[in-house]
Structures are given as structure tokens and as C-alpha cells.
Length: 118
Image (tube, rainbow, N blue to C red; front, side, top):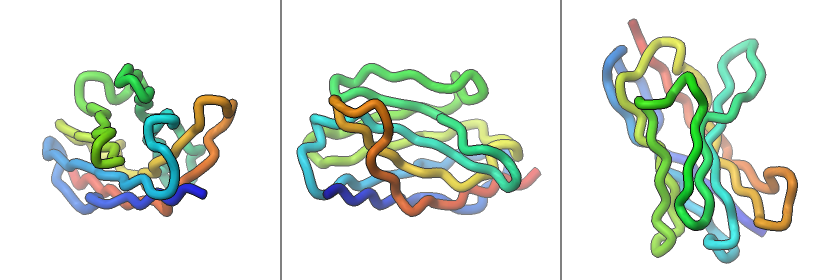
């Protein structure tokens, strides 16, 4: 069983920065692709950024150039550095893990709220 615990959300003014952290507990971190998703009120959950065990990344067009996903395999941590935040980035952000052999995300964190004021 895997547990994911996000931290680092909060209230920030537009143009500001936040760094989200996700602790991975329970299994071999290197065997998992990690991702950040977000869900704003009344909207569907969307993928923000993903990182493979080898460090390859991809991110949504809406956050390219502003958000950076990274991971520390020694500490079993994944991060989302968010710069130049906009009010439309306001959402609950979730960390998710997908094993190499799985077609879907197997584990989800409880979410952390990010609110960007204008």
C-alpha cells in the first residue's frame, strides 16, 4: 500500500510563488511515475505535470514555463514549484502515483488547497 501526503498549499497573490511537496510512503518510489493534478470548483480534475522515475517530465500547456515538477528519489519526494501564479490556478492540488505496470493512477493524496488572489 502507498500513502501520499501533500503539503505547501496556501494563499498567495497573483504573480507569487508556492512550492508543493508530496511525500511517498510504503513501496519502492523508483517504480512509480508521479504526477500532480488539480481540480477547481465546478470543474473536472486535470493533469498539471508528470514525472517518470527517470526524471522525464511533461506539463499542461496552461502551466508550461511557470510550473516545474521534480522528484528526489533518495527522499521519496515529489515537488511542484509554481511561479507567476494566476487566479485561474486556484484549485485543490493532488499528488498521484502510478506504478510502471499500471494504466491508471493507483494512489492519490488528500489534496492541498492553493488560492491565488488577484
